[in-house]
Image (cartoon, rainbow, N blue to C red; front, side, top):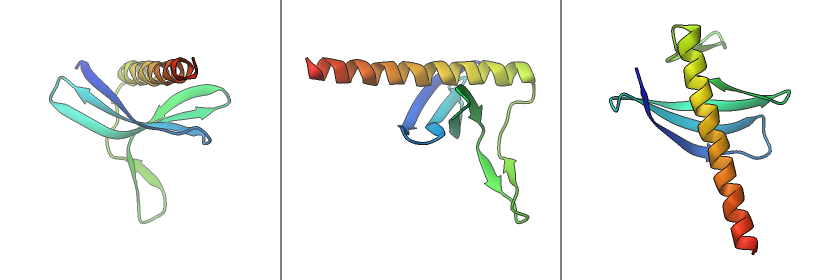
Length: 96
């Protein structure tokens, strides 16, 4: 399965949640609402989830293997960091 698109849908500045992302696989399957979280200066992703009647959360969709999870996480974080760099570049260009 190949990641064919990553869209950074929303970026947050003042929160541990840094972004909400959509990822498309093989131009056939889109997974929305993947969250980029920052804790203790480390970024990681949280898959979309739903709250159960018991008050706990359960992933709606998630990678089965650790290798695939690492691949998705790396790609999403790289896309998020590229988006931040793009925004920073646009701000510095506007300031000139």
